[in-house]
Image (cartoon, rainbow over all chains, first blue to last red; front, side, top):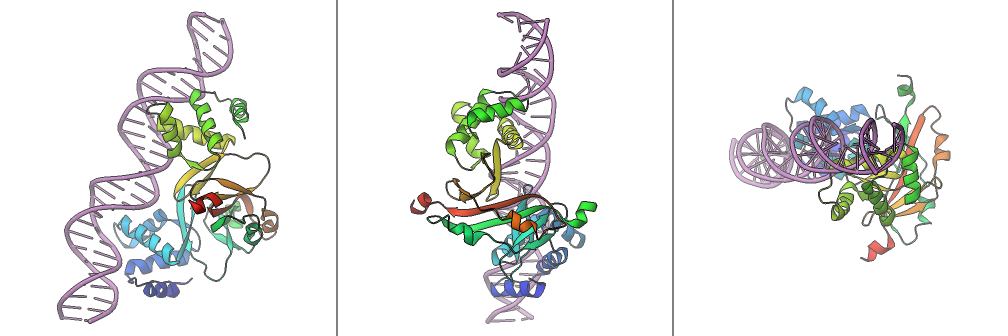
Length: 137
Length: 137
DNA sequence: TAACTCAATCGTAATCATTCTTATTTACAA
DNA sequence: TTGTAAATAAGAATGATTACGATTGAGTTA
């Protein structure tokens, strides 16, 4: 998802477009990988001196709700990244730089067969490790 | 893993066997599913009035390190369950009662092919939903 | 079995991420 | 341009987890 799509998405859901919201979108659009709330706060503080935690967390959750961001948990902290809307897939996630690589394999069809009486609401398939760049660094 | 194996595992790693450690093992052995630190504290307080958080968290992490417990993150809280040592598999996890069902499918062999220059350290494949019992409750 | 030693535990304070609260400001519709 | 609901500020509160100095106890050794 790019910035324009995200702003459109906000409007569709009846949310306003503020400078900070745009900056948050720009940030995630540029970094292209998983980042924590703290990472974002640090970035925003360069522009806005003493930004409110509330603003950051509220917007992160809002973005997650409307589908602009997706989230995962890495060593005890929530991480966010721009959502990939195109099609269903999973991710390899670099533990060092947070960057991701798409994985096309999804075993859910096969798995469903062995969960006949179970109500499946969600699933997570993530591979963790080091990307080529971070192995040499 | 059963209680005796767990105690053996503690000894092998040079850790002592205390009453509280046994009780923690008994707890996880009985509940057979994912539980939070808070769940465990509540249980232990029935026996030991005012147990130290330190004791609980230290032992949970210790157990996780030596492989007695495995851990996952469910709605923002760490959850623990007795480790299944027999063979590699994944879990369906009931969001309501925390119980798990083993899933034999593991797509990692296939996935590795598309991650040639990546160093794979770990992976997580979990299915979330409601078990048959919790759907009717 | 006594005493020794280091691990384990206690009790509580501190920390860290996150959420809440009230007052103020701002986007944008009318 | 103005009115109003939404967004933000500022910082206190919360909830899970970790840290710490003092004390207790398990398992070893004499």
